[in-house]
Length: 117
Image: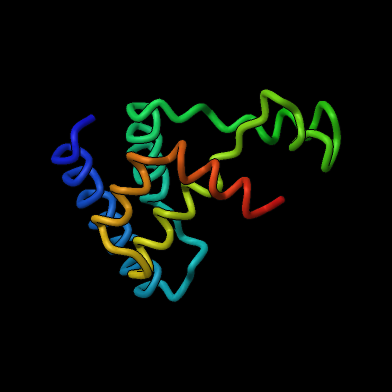
C-alpha cells in the first residue's frame, strides 16, 4: 500500500470517527458505536496490506493462561499499533507520524518490546 492510498483511507477513517463522535454527542451516549465496525474494517485493511499479523493474544491467553500466553513465540498483539490510530483520532499525533509509524511497525514494535523488558 502506498502512502497516498493510506493517507486517503486514514482521512475516511477520521471522517467516520468524527461522525461517530457527533452521533454520540447528539444522543449523549458514548456507548453508541454504529460506525465502529466500518472504522475497524479500514484499520484492518491497512494493517493487512502492510503485512501486520493478526492479533492472536486472546487465543493464546485462553490456551496458555495469563500471562503465559503473551510469552509464546507465536504471540502477536496489535495493541501498540492500534493505539497509534487512537492517538491520531485524539489529535496527539499527526497523520504523517501515524503513517511513519505504520510503515515502520516492525521497528516500532521491536523498540516497544525493548521498552517493556
